[in-house]
Image (cartoon, rainbow, N blue to C red; front, side, top):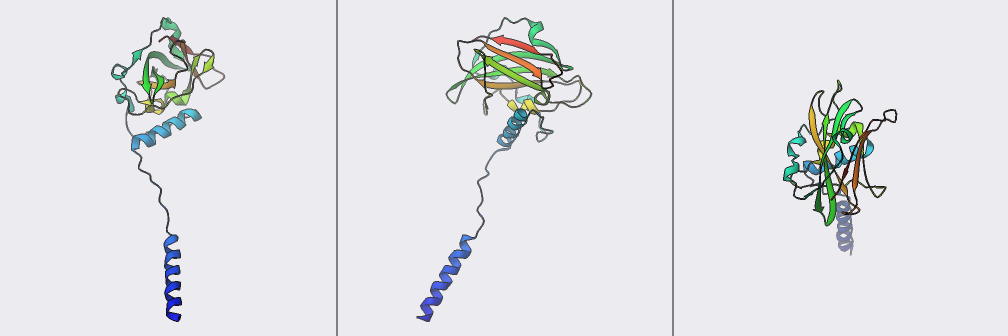
Length: 198
């Protein structure tokens, strides 16, 4: 009887010790997924990520490689290109793609840093995308040839130019899309704007 109680007590003790082990979470994320999450958060918070693991993500941007329908625009160049908050900004192209069974538009911007310190596009500018008077929410696009949203938070040195991209889920393919780039600073009323049609 004593032997049985000892064996049972030993089993209970062994099971309780095994249950105290530390659980581990599955963290099998790629460096790009981690950086993508960092960049999205940086954009939403209106601040730039200081470094993006030392990589130049602008090398992955190629609107010609993006498979989709190119949007048309008859907006005059002096409306969508110019100086905004001491830097040169131009709203370039827009392409409609199908991503996760949704209509998503990828928009490219050219950003030239004319200040005397490193800057990122998302650290200085707010991009507003509107259809039918309603703002569109940004979309996360990963793994599409020619698209690299991490460029939004990539710092560039004074005098450098970078092409950055932003994506939005469309409400309708039949409604015009108006893109406006404006500084976060409420004291600065400069902006550029461009309307695209699909």
